[in-house]
Length: 72
Ligand SMILES: [Zn+2]
Image 1 (cartoon, rainbow, N blue to C red):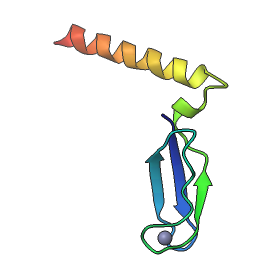
Image 2 (cartoon, rainbow, N blue to C red):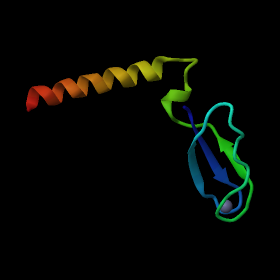
Image 3 (cartoon, rainbow, N blue to C red):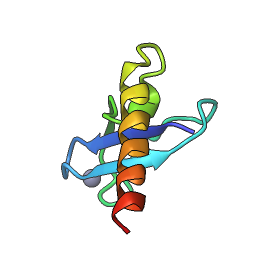
Image 4 (cartoon, protein in one colour):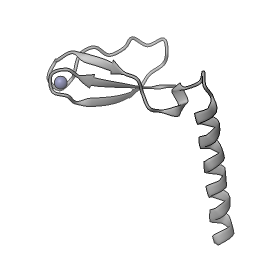
């Protein structure tokens, strides 16, 4: 499930929301009732098209896990 990031136009609150692709985007800030703008998330999971970020991230994780095991 991708993470969608929103910013409120009025109070500048940023929200990160896990939503299904089929779910309606949020439009109203729950804090002040202002208008929410949908931001492009920096999460690698959304960059399915490019793929390199996800792959690189996964590789890094694996390497770090291995390192931890060796040290302990
Ligand atoms: Zn707001």
